[in-house]
Length: 351
DNA sequence: TACTCGTGGGA
DNA sequence: TTCCCAAGAGT
Image: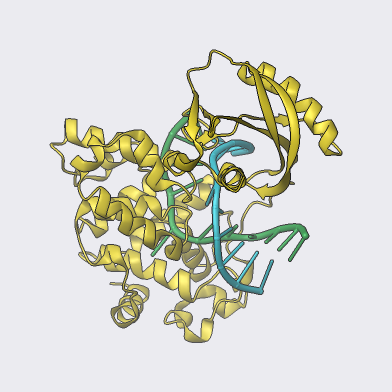
């Protein structure tokens, strides 16, 4: 065992966090947790994980559920393809693996939603296999420990970091090793202002010796985020509201929304209302008369920002889309929606 | 390779 | 307010 691994495991033994998914070695529970934790904070995941495991305690229960209900439990967690892939993978596990997750990284990676990291995490944590699991935390910690100057998102950087992770993996202790590196990255070796005085690895850390901690890891600079203007139609009839289901691929796939459209840049409500009328005709086959403005708000996604204007509309003609549905205002919670449309739903509920 | 895909917390 | 970014995967 290398010095790094020895110091790391000694630290982890009495510093490990107690988390819901660490109280079991049920591969299904580990799998669900790992997928929920992709690009998502631990504190955010905890209540979703507990609710999910109560509703879908087994692979079989998940496989038997409808996609609508699966998305409903995922609502608010973001990156909804994770939920759809988890659902699809559960059905594959039932059909091809007898309801049990395979204890093999290649077989795991063949399942939708399980990539290199998640396969390594499940293999090591749930099955005790000697597999590395390189996530954002491990990349940052290892890049600092070994002064990796290559960009961590480059092919060369990836190869180097995965091999470093594997080289230092203590045989038979991959579960502790992987989680220890992640905990260290989350609590001490943080992106900004790492607490090196509290770090069990500072004496073997190249970045600490050189004083270049905050310069690592090297990442690609981000471009500018565009800003779009959307207008949403609130069409009501006898206490019900018209919703549209988004395509299953792409942004907020499979979720419900108030029919809306991305407009060209606009300056005010009146201009947005005119543009909305035209956009709904082409986008949804809806003829509407635009009424009062319900207000507007801004929202930021990962790669763009939007300002959304919402209008109360009267329906003149309906399109032929099968993805359109009238929903009772009081039952809107049964429809999984993204944050923006949930915001509009509150306006509708409030009158 | 480069881009897409959400959300909420903290500096 | 604005920006970064958090247990990545799919295309």
